[in-house]
Length: 122
Image (cartoon, rainbow, N blue to C red; front, side, top):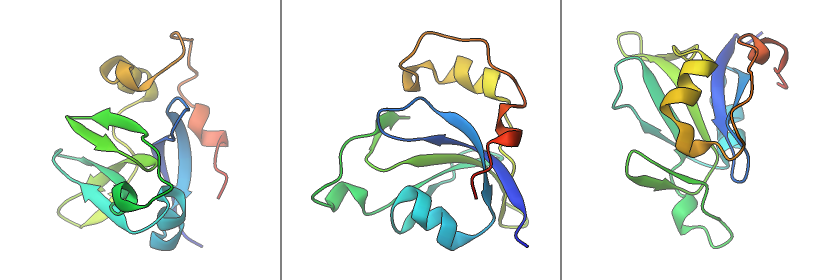
């Protein structure tokens, strides 16, 4: 059985949400919609996305982050550079919301910190 990893998913037209995904490259490809690209400019986290989304004819804009437009769903995930493997996202959801307000469309709501624990669709 694959281990589950807590991460944050941002889909086009939706606010980011804390979810759990299996540590499985095929499932990650399915979530982002294609070949997985990685932005690893952070010490202990990465952004995963479909690296070919911007050239697909039916793809629509999702969001802009760190000066870069993303056209696929994106996953914020923890990353262990030494072991070269994914891990739980290192930031709690409340702190994430405070630092990435531009990704949210709805007014701030009270967020249950452990909300992602029960939101494991895979």
